[in-house]
Image 1 (tube, rainbow, N blue to C red):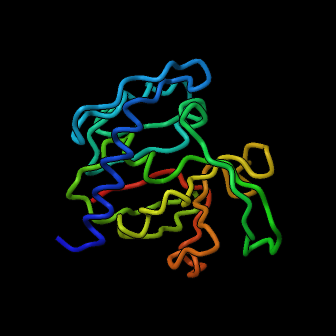
Image 2 (cartoon, one colour):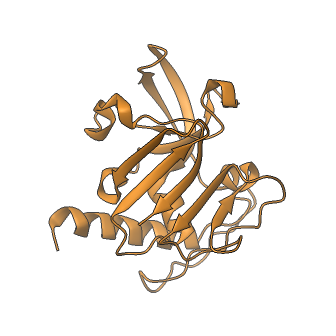
Image 3 (tube, one colour):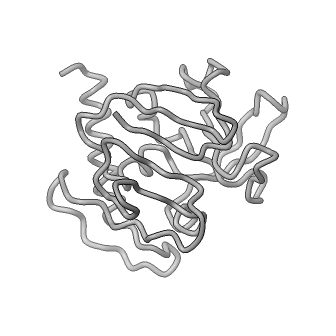
Length: 186
């Protein structure tokens, strides 16, 4: 097993353990005991009460809508989020983004430890294919807020991929995808 795959597997195992401790409403949640095994199942994802904003299919196990894992905005915003300031290369200014680390969201979806590829699809049919290892940095986010407000579709929302300044993958502007509506894990 290559070092990168081992690092990704370790990060995903940690994220699965962390996701298993998450509650639907993080503000009111009491800490759950740590999972005793890296293979512990992630906490169930609530069935969307409205239209899902993000659907994950493929090599995932935490299904809540047929063979998919579907997230509505309340489910995404209930997960532990990170806020970061980055230079947004398309609007050419510093912006504050808040979102869920990609590794945490994939762990919550129950990504298979053998998964190697993530295909991200946008509302306008733009697609980006990345390696699971490309998304192992916990500072890579699925952002749902920009400058403290939910991101509207006409501004790249409701979900967009955000990279930290030092991300090698993020240096390729073609990997910056917004208005993400679905993900296929293979």
